[in-house]
Amino acid sequence: MKIWRLSGSSVGSIVAISLFAGLQGLPRSAIASDNALRINEDRADNSCANSSFERNFRYGPAEPNVLDIVRTGGADSSRRHPVLLFVVGESFTEPAGSAASGALDQAMCLAAKNNLVAVRMSYRLAPKHHWPAAAQDVAAAVSWIKDNIDLFGGDRNEVIAVGYSVGAFHLASSLAHRELRVQNSALAGVVLISGLYRIGTHSSAPVKAYIGDDPAKYKERSIFPGILFTESPILLAWSEKDTDHVVTESEELKSLMCEARRGACPQHALLPSGGSLASVIEVLGEPIQSLISQIEARGLP
Image (cartoon, rainbow, N blue to C red; front, top):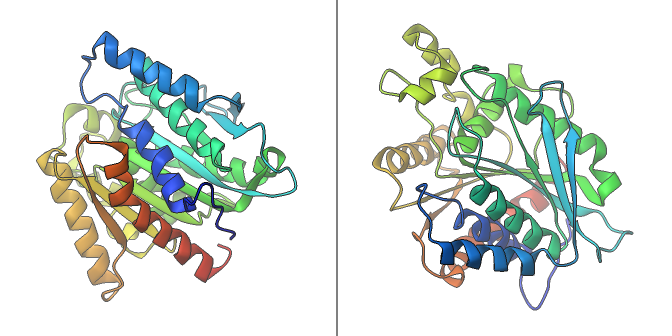
């Protein structure tokens, strides 16, 4: 894998820019000031200059099974570029609002601006659809990308999936349950950010709308122990300002992976809550660069 550099930045920092420019913009509440919205719109306009949006590619038969792809108009067509697949969601039952979608557009544009191909997927939601629908959608989306991304300048062997919040659970489920995978759905790398990883009787009503309300099935629908032995290099990230259960479950996942892998712990990063973009890159840029180095070292998936 070639490490692209732009103005002295490694692709690790480039990934961090694209991730967190978007993730900082994802609303933690439904309340946002007009000024904040205007700032986000201005940033999106700037970051999306010279970026090409290609929307609504169907990767499966269900209505939500669509992908959006962003790439820069100035990309070197003779090269294949790394691919970022964004699996993002903050609810098991509700689609992302316009503010969150706009922030994700911005993140994708920044990735494309730095010679990456960015993809985001939509997936099936509860209560109409239940476990393992969304995890199956992740596998199907990865398979579609690996079959078709060369048409958009992407490298099918360098697909890194980024799961955020509920999206991290669906991505982790897809990795943990081999029976849910489809042909050609292996990933080169995985980033799990502020995810929900434990399900059970304590789970909220929206979570149970997806996983079901029969405690006898929770163990077989858990990401454990399968996630502990996934072959793709993983970067775990969370913020100390996340809710208590997100912090606890993220720390537990890291600890269990360390134990299962006999000390070969996953890369991890503790993220600041808010703050400047520079402070976020300082925290996450190096771990993502390390993840990419792991991918380089192990060769093609």
